[in-house]
Length: 343
Ligand code: SAM
Image (cartoon, rainbow, N blue to C red):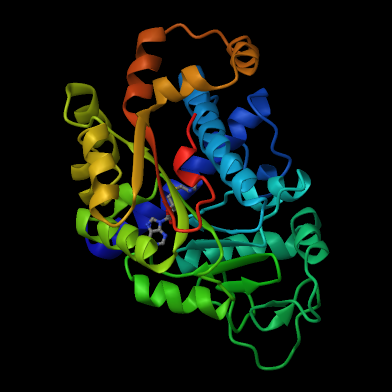
């Protein structure tokens, strides 16, 4: 596949992730009142092992994230890299757990789509306006919720809507930026325009994102993050143990969709995941597979979700879970205790 096609396939993974999440939510795995505004309901049922896998992914990331919010008392920033249609901002607001500022980054095309949803759906735009304390709230060139001006506005090439700049939105607590994570200096410049404060403790999240870059590109991103923020944590969720037969089948499936999977090279083992973080400037690093994460999740809730759907293929589920991992790393010059965050 050419570069553009490969990028297009990667953007397609955003749709997949949120359709799967929406399906699992509709079965009752966890609550997310916002996902319905971003994606359609799945046409077919998703297999129970997929739903359980997403449950562990969402809860695993959320567990570490909440530990970070607790250590920093929400006096921090979150930067969600490759956020896709993630609803975390809205869920945190409902739980009264908003950081000082929450940033999302994704390809401009994905961001345009997300902004379009936000603008057209009050349950999404209201929380942003409620948490906004400045005067005018700019989305592109227009105020949120205001009628389109009839002046000579350009048409967005992606969504065909009349916007001069539909690829970014900035408010006091929520900001979304269209960019390419493979170019970190451009990324930093855009984030700074949206008032990123590098002195604030910062949590960076990459959920199923790094694998789509070359090892060099993801290393650069990790290095940029480690060298930019004096106090930070990085959470990465992605494939691991891809060298065995099961891993090969997973790779073939993704290749069939023409995704650029240059990054699977680093998904060899949990050790290589940890090593990558340490080699790129992080002080502490952990990596555990999702079967482990699953065993660490609050068991009462795990019991509840295990009652939702009958899972026939226990072995398949376990294999699947052993091929995904959560890795987290920290840097903590202020001694907030980030190094002790664990399951
Ligand atoms: N993190 C979201 C989640 O877990 O629901 C979305 C995951 S989706 C599998 C991967 C996301 O990363 C897509 O939205 C894709 O557009 C984004 N992405 C991948 N490579 C990127 C890059 N180089 N620059 C910006 N976004 C990228």
